[in-house]
Image (cartoon, rainbow, N blue to C red; front, top):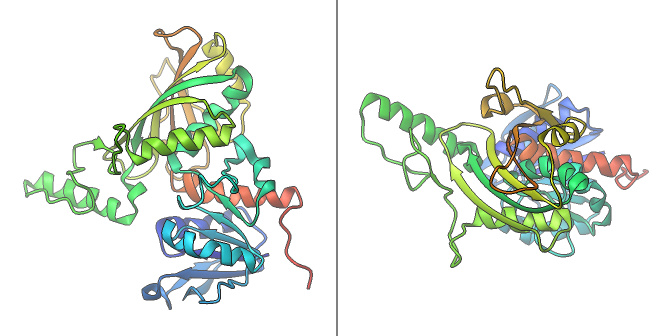
Amino acid sequence: MRVAIVGATGAVGTEFLGILEERRFPVTSLSLFASERSAGRELEFRGSPVTVRALPDDGDLEADVVFSSAGGSLSRAHAQAWARHGAIVIDNTSAWRMDPDVPLVVPEANGDDALAHRGIIANPNCSTIIALVALAPLHRAFGLRRATVATYQAVSGAGMAGIDELRDLTRAALDGDPLRPRKFRHSIAFNLFSHDSDIGDDGYNVEERKLLLESRKILGLPELRISATCVRVPVFRAHSEAIHAEFEGPVSADAAREVLAAAPGIRVVDDRQRNTFPMPLDASGGDDVLVGRLREDTSLPGALALFVAGDQIRKGAALNAVQIAEHLIAQGALRAPVP
């Protein structure tokens, strides 16, 4: 299968390379695209170098599937052209997520929605993916009505610049030097702050609004009530989320644990005796969303409290997109053309 990665030199782009290799995705040819300043670089795939190219003007990436993670404006401008040239575009930007004609897919939650694509399939925001891997099986079992979510988001969600800033400012703080943030508005060293995205008139920022609107679309619950508070924390990789979820009727922690233990993409980490629950260090580099701290919410009958952690670059981005493509292949909806 001819595969193209757009935004190949970014954090998510390079993650795609490792995941495609690890999962033995059926790649017969691989094309890597990035900005003109990155053209000419070589990245390794299956032990061989692949040269990064600038995007062609005609929109023909000579691919059967395109994994795109190069920014919303670029995707908005070019994804339809890539699709017109025969590719299925699985887009990791915000450009197409809320388009009513574009499926928004978490395979564990609504994988078959991808089959209704018209050339483009959207990958949700990382926080949405991590939350819904846990919430979707609970919704199927008990009927989700409402959720409040507090996210603890790693700096790698802002790319390499976020990682560099946490490292540099932590070193400066320990050395007693002035803290001069560049990527973020506030110092991330030994600090946390409200997510660095624009705040609307309703007081919610963009990240919080994504979690609400994307969850409604993915779960097919247009009236679902979600209130999110998204926070940036001094963690290099993997987002964590505290979730309080209300269901149609009472749900015990034991019943929820049984559902989650059987659900794909989840590892239950819920050891009360050892006080060990999901942590971003344990989630980093892994495919599963870790779920634990399961308990009945004492503030509301029929509600559960839980804590989740997931690698937002892997499951929250590249892995989710590759799993969408794998689902299409399994359903016979993505095939390489016969020569």
